Every structure is written in structure tokens, then in C-alpha cells.
Length: 149
Image 1 (cartoon, rainbow, N blue to C red):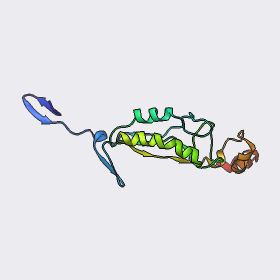
Image 2: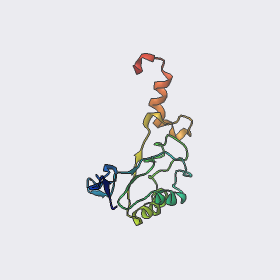
Image 3: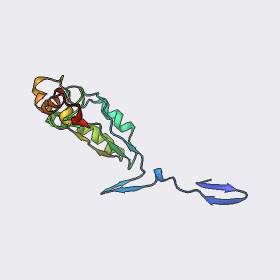
Image 4: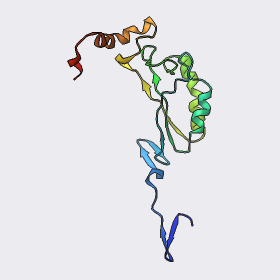
């Protein structure tokens, strides 16, 4: 009945569902408040987003809907997990363009979640990454259990 509820021969307007109402986020006009939360999918190769991400993100796009990209490294020492994409090289930036274009083509809004894991970087990564792990390794290797309390 077009958003109306009928009770005992009376017609009432149904209250809008807040989750589905528009929202202004800075300069962005969202058509609803359902947001694709960022995930760490680990589906890239050599830190380059892959073409399958075009389908993944476009399937989850709605007109005026907000999507937040999975964690995206800002440098080769920013990575905390293998097979996560980055945005620090021209190849990576170019790989993101068709993904973003697909979201925009469906009227979606796309935020890039930039990421640097800092001192919790994985110490098993190649030696060139160890500089970003140094503080973490010192903290883990230093016996002082009270320091974290």
C-alpha cells in the first residue's frame, strides 16, 4: 500500500527506516546509510589490484551508496599481510582506475582506505621491509612484560 500501514480501518503512514534514509557526509550526498565496510581481502598480486575487483566492487555498488576500499598500502614497507594492494606505484594507481570507474558508473561513492601497519608489520617479509618492523621487533624481543600494562 505504498508505504502505508492499515489498522482497524485506519491508514497510517509508515515511519521511514533510518538506515535507508539519505545522509550528507561532508560534500557527499548518500542515498542511504548502508556502507560497504573496508575488508582485507588479500586478493591482489604483487600489491596490484586485480581485474576481478571491478566485479566485486561494482556488484556492491548502489546509486548514492558509499563503499570503502579494502586496506590499501601507501608504500612497500606499509604492508602487514601478503597479497594486499597498494597505491604507491603508477601500475597500482592505473589498476585502481577501472575499479573506481565501475563504482562511479553505477552512481556509487568510493573511498580509498589508505594503510600503513606501522610497527606490527610482518617480520617474515623480505629484508627490505625490516626497517618498518624495527620498533615492533625490539618491543617483542625485549623481555619486560610490564611494559604493555
